[in-house]
Image 1 (cartoon, rainbow, N blue to C red):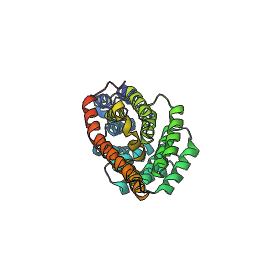
Image 2 (cartoon, rainbow, N blue to C red):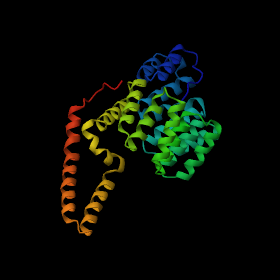
Image 3 (tube, rainbow, N blue to C red):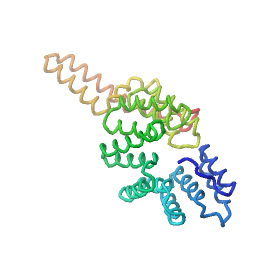
Image 4 (cartoon, helix red, strand yellow):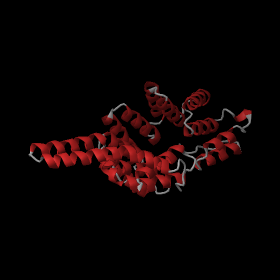
Length: 295
């Protein structure tokens, strides 16, 4: 959510500045200093709800958004925050209601259209999500959330190539924002590009060093990119089930062709590979530190 009118108190403006700098906890501290007479200013509700969303305190965010709507009247931004919080709490019908109420107030709001599309993707309503994404793209094709939902929609449709291509476009348009780096890292990891994934997640951490999800993703990518795990990259790319089926198919095929000795050697090699895939990742996790350096 972008900052609205900062309101009559300097603490609110400082809170929004802290949010834009990726420091939501400090933003909440600033908002605690707002005089009681201004506590129900729309900008205060919006900033507090945004800070709670960014710290993933979903129940509190939903409560603040509801109080804001009750105190200040219908507001698309608060409806978007309420819908996101309810979605994260698992109350999808109420989240959809919040998004629809927000769109009744402003049917052209890109954030609401994208949030609603994300909810539809969660419910596997891909066609509906695509329609909402199209409406958002008509309003602002270069909006960061439009890129995010494009990537997510491609992923849900099973198009990891399309998702990676969209993530590269997102990164090209917004090279300095953490979410673009993180989305690029995610799609690269799915495609088995572990080195690229680690580089992108590390840059996401550099952009937002307080985000624990980025730090954990960077560590996982660093582990996957370790030289000892190079032989396991086909598993990361194809997936464990596909790899097992492929190996079994090769071994059975060799036996059917009468190449029993070769099939036996392939079986032993495969058994060794399986043991390697179980033991070496555990060793690498011990070798890679639990925290940075990721910047």
